[in-house]
Length: 375
Image (cartoon, rainbow, N blue to C red; front, side, top):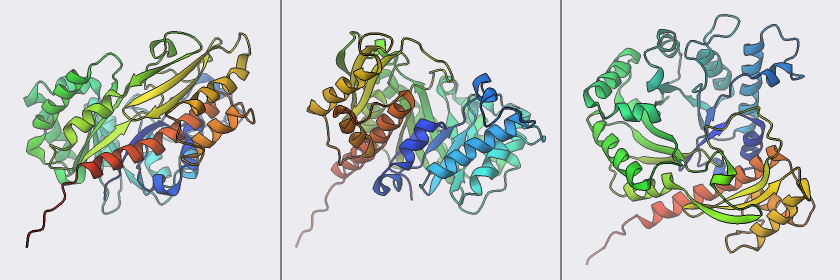
């Protein structure tokens, strides 16, 4: 009934390609969670939108088409976390309502997301109340990093949840709750673990259908992952450590979610002139990161050939047959492709999603206690 893994993905070209190229064995085990990006000045100047008289509507239609074309999973989520909660398209419909209808038309089951942080905005409440959802639809109550702090005021926190459920006419059995720590690069595993245990206790009275932990350990700036240019390092995936530490003690379904290989605080539409070449290769509990140098120096974009060879020759490489992303890395190591920033988001994300499904599945199998049959 539940997914093995919930990848939180920006609804952008790199992530779409990564999803399209997933093996069915993996796409069937995930429920992608799409973050709808903001409409930027670059978007407005793009060929698809230039001259549009309904800029927001056309932008959201384009994103919905991208999601529908890329996704082959049975269920999806989406959220307007980066948008103002009182945003409307030009025809007067709330952006949430419009996107829900555009995505539901594809046949996928769309699970509406309720942002705890935005609940006090009347426009947002009305948009959620106005959704017409089919039988069997689950809702996702997203508690973001700021709202996680609110959970230490237990009365306010639980009262707000009761208000949300009552206003939307939902039973707790129809709701999955996501505790989204966001960027955890400056948090410790111990503090995350303590917060998560407190959160689980705080919502225990509700008996939610499932609980999710989400977070991102990969920093915004490559210097914070690998200090030296043209070298490698490992980055701990703290959210995975915490999920594994708590999983066995949970009675209700406890799901894993993360942000793939892109930090949620990273800015969209900003061209970094001196961006370093990099490959983010997900391994058990960690990222193995190969960092190059500024693409304005030395062998410029051709440095990707060397970085791909570093990955392929490492003890972590799983072979071209593991995923499309792995196959692309190996092709680059042979200098058959080079790839730009968007392509490398695709390759790294495709490998990441494939690996995490395997990692979570293997961990869950290892925690199944075999029944002892006695004569």
